[in-house]
Image (cartoon, rainbow, N blue to C red):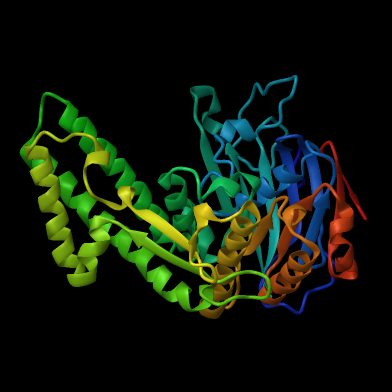
Length: 406
């Protein structure tokens, strides 16, 4: 299947007055259950409806790949390929390929500017078992995925996140780190570096050969990146709290905090002092024979706490509906803060979110999303839930990888 070569040509669309982010042309090829689909939305709200399994969430996943990482499903790149009877026998380095590898192309309006972004699986190495993602921005290969953060941020809420306050702390850390990514592109690099170095440190401690200088070098890297990660998290909470603590219509205020040993040290010491203390704790743990990362302090042990501000109740003790409202409050506050600091809020992807809201909250959400100024993509099985949006939105009905613009 071919991703058309003129995919980035300008289209005659009705421009929004918003200075935010908006996808004005989207092409997905060989992605999940789509052979090819082309969207040309003209509004800042896009609604995708259809039966379960039709492919609505797949399109949101494609848009989530406009940010660094593996998208909101965290799938391997080869898992995104559309399953075809005939497998490719030749290789291609282009995003515009007639082989099996998936590709996504967008024309993105950022205020008055138009940016072209393409991403897909790099097939040059697939016969060697490769699994590399290629990104092009305005036709030029990106040096790293973090270059995407220069042009846009992407936020999402999915049904899988409904258990965020009940699942393990690692899921909450990942969720909050993504919020930080929207403000600090290097945060993702720090997190990846930290996790990699932590694994290398563990392997070294498990081996029979323990080079003292190597251990110290790894521990220094762990301490430096670890303190930077925690400082970035704490700083975002500090900036987010004045907005997040306010009730917005039917959505409650939220009190966020993060707990951990390093966090306590940072309250009373400088970052450099905490780095030294962190390194010392790692060295002492090594001397005592501690190997496993879960037995030492660090950002991988941090716990995020969320309170319903009106009820002063921990999120994990709130009802399912209240937890959904808390998550929405966090996303709205995050979008507002980014708009204040960067001039635009993230491109927002809401998968089956409105289905679990009553009419009051649903209508309030539509109004609040509109005030953020950037484009919002929403999915649902019941088109009537979006009826009040009327001419304010683009409506697409999805049928097993095919779409109809309503």
